[in-house]
Image (cartoon, rainbow, N blue to C red; front, side, top):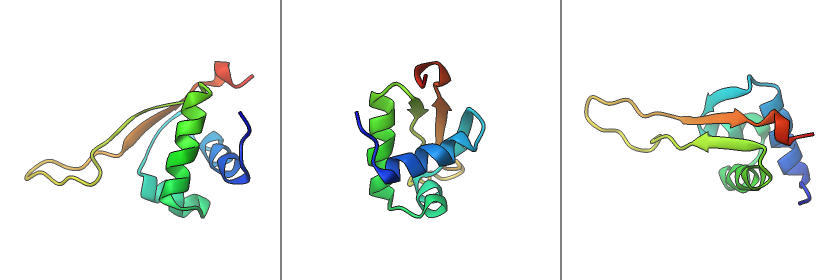
Length: 81
């Protein structure tokens, strides 16, 4: 599976973080200079390649007394070789 330049930019951003990190799609998009949709497509591609895992947060939802949680990501370095 070929990576686009945006996919590579996002992967490079992830590699600059800890192997496990917590980020919202909005923050990733802002910090990489791409759209949220581009981040979503790149995440899906990286997941399909076995490089990225994540647990979706509930960033849009605000329940009374409960803080929204951002996505929890994990890079799978053993799959990147």
